Amino acid sequence: MPRPLSATIHLDSMRHNLARARSCAPGSKIWGVVKANAYGHGLERGMRGFADADGLALIETENAVRLRELGWTRPVLLLEGIFEAADVALLGEYGFNSAVHCIEQVKMLEYTKLFSPIDVHLKMNTGMNRLGFKPDEYAAAYARLRAIPGIRNITLMTHFANADELEHPRLTVHEQVRRFQQGAQGLAGERSLSNSGGVLQQALLSAELSNDWVRPGIMLYGGTPGGKTAAEYKLRPTMTLASSIIGIQHLTAGDTVGYGSSFQATGPMTVGVVACGYADGYPRSAPHGTPVLVDGVRTTLVGRVSMDMMTVDLTPIPNARVGSKVVLWGDGLPIDDVAASAGTIGYELMCALAPRVRVLEGALGQLA
Ligand SMILES: *Cc1c(COP(=O)(O)O)cnc(C)c1O
Image (tube, rainbow, N blue to C red; front, side, top):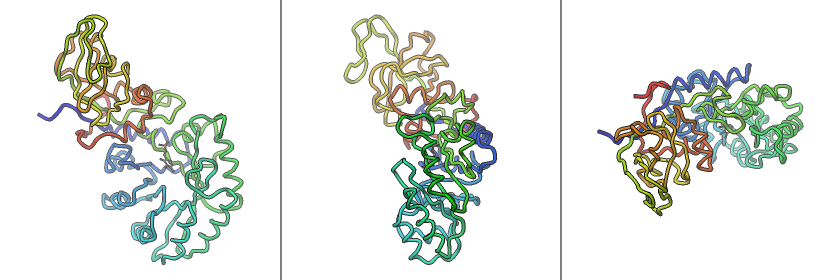
């Protein structure tokens, strides 16, 4: 009997969320973002769940190669481009589309002979100040790429810092779009601007955003980048982390629970011990009060999360017993709620799913 903890991946929800992205950004082609092991869901599952995407985008060159080995024949985009000159050969060999964000990458492409034509995404830094050419350097970088014989299509790309908060006081999407349009003026090529936040706000931004391609990530996994809840955006959870109660303790007033005795009972209460801890990817930072489902009833975490276990208040579930079903996030409990309580974002929880957790597949709402 394996440990009762498992993560069930809902491929049906992944397909549903991709369809949601399509209806939010009608007419745009979609890069399904599968970096970080498809946000913890498994690269191969990302490929199957997003089989209808126009392309898949990721960071790791070795996983881009794996997509080809797994049989993905449509476009693949390397979101950070290549890391050294030797990677240029991969672009031609596997037909990868590569971001080009710095002059060093332009030089690698200039100095390495391309044996088959490649497509690139030229990245503009419109205020994120992570990767990309400044708007006033952009046309020159474009011209250098255009002069390389092996380069076919150049897509013009930028990335939003605050797509979930259109009126951000420091940097608005409108301002980033304005800088992008200024830097890209007169340059031929498709445009790629929006992450999930941009896709979800597309309706509000449609006058400004001419997105030939969009690059949703988190929304495809049923999380939100901020703004409204996943349910309000009609997104469905794609990962349910579930376990069982493996022990029960009856406390009296003054008893404490777990390391550091951070929780103390004020009266008689029952706590359940759940087989899930921070070594499974559950955040140790999650405080007392973080939501948990036991037998479908919402209750809370008590005490400190330890490596392999955590404890929950069973007061609202008097019939709970050893073997009772626990949902840590996913079906019936939005991952964003758990993340907010732990002071993080759904992205981090998904990506942190530990290798020791068994991963299963099953339709949403049909967990055993
Ligand atoms: C990760 C990433 C995305 C997807 O972002 P989400 O917020 O998950 O939608 C899009 N574009 C780039 C360049 C990225 O690195």
